[in-house]
Length: 388
Ligand code: NZQ
Ligand code: ZN
Image (cartoon, rainbow, N blue to C red; front, side, top):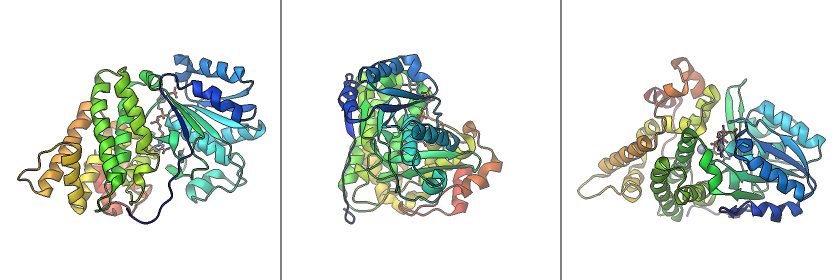
């Protein structure tokens, strides 16, 4: 294990078909004023909104409604939430939705009492929080990001053409998250599989680094195998509880800081994907699937042994008589076959990328050093071209 580290995760999880009962246990810990954040309407359609309002009222809470948190939440929406939170002296932000609503709620929680521009402070300058933080709780309805048990918050600034994530410390993690796999049954297939690939990408971003024999990598392999097995079932039958519950749990563990411990991590696919998102507003997981194969083919030789291990341990490729290069290649082919099987987007054109965007997307892509190879700006452009 690399270096020294601290591990603690303060998010209490309530998991399973009766998970919403957990809300009754949590609410007495907070004051009266609840900011209820949600998206474009799926929670009203499913009836979950009414159920939650009923529980809040039964617990004597004042509800301040904040609808319309869009997929890939914007900085303008953040400012709106900050104003509302401050004006209403909010005691708890309750996020009901997917990663976007959870991320957004964390952004509001650190920004409402921020005396300078939060976009500038947290997303451009990456400064730490030094003001009051409003606690956040989540009721998750869409699986993928891990936002339910981490400090990540990704905000898009369309004017500046930047989509940036700040990974806050555990003082910003949700205090609790309600994970009921049946809530994810209504997620449209496109979003569902985008979420599956997002999970896979989170694990790969943390797996493809270092050459040591690290426990975190074994955990990552187990999570990938569970995801692959369950995703194959879920694409055919989205209401398969066992598959969807396994995937929900896998997504949480894929990005709740555990498998990053004792190693460096990559995150370059996310850097490219986020920049693509800033230009296209495309679905997060699809921005990752569209560029991943070209990216991994670009860096494969720099981490050959790990890519060979990926082929054997994750995809069950038979290693007999094969070189590391052959195995690594077969591993990426197996990844590609799975991506086709679950139906993720494999090219940027489909997401609305045009050739005149290459330069801007490359400019908005942060070049990181934690993976097997630090890319150059030219290599980013080559990856974009190869992903069209
Ligand atoms: O807005 P509504 O009507 O609720 O519809 C949403 C939205 O259109 C819909 N949806 C969610 N749950 C549903 C449902 N539709 C029917 N039934 C349900 N049960 O799905 C659409 C997408 O939701 P969204 O929350 O945007 O998806 P996701 O969970 O993938 O979140 C994406 C955001 O998270 C960020 C991404 O960049 C993106 O902004 N990320 C956050 C991370 C973190 N916190 O650590 C890491 C990730 O890498 C990612 O960057
Ligand atoms: Zn992601």
